[in-house]
Amino acid sequence: MNHIFARVSDAAFSDNLVTKKTTKGYLFTLFRRPIDWRLTKQRSITKSSIETKLLALSYAAIKSI
Image (cartoon, rainbow, N blue to C red; front, side, top):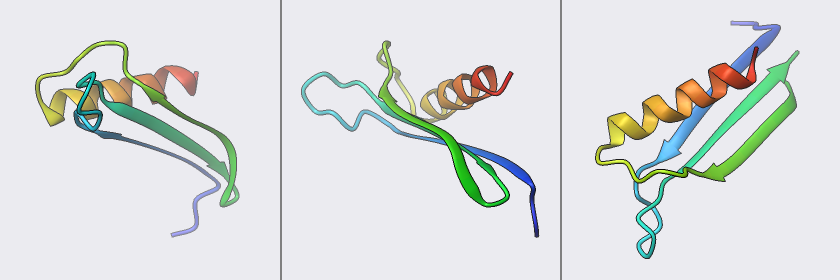
């Protein structure tokens, strides 16, 4: 597939053993080249990997507007 604009997001559930916080990130590409990206720790502590992924996805969706 040849996408002009693409966005992806991902999160690592509870990857910090001290704070129990999750790392989340997103990447936007245009013509297969990165145009915006971010990697941050979530403010809240999530209780499941699905909740973590949904928070990362919603964060990426808000940033694309």
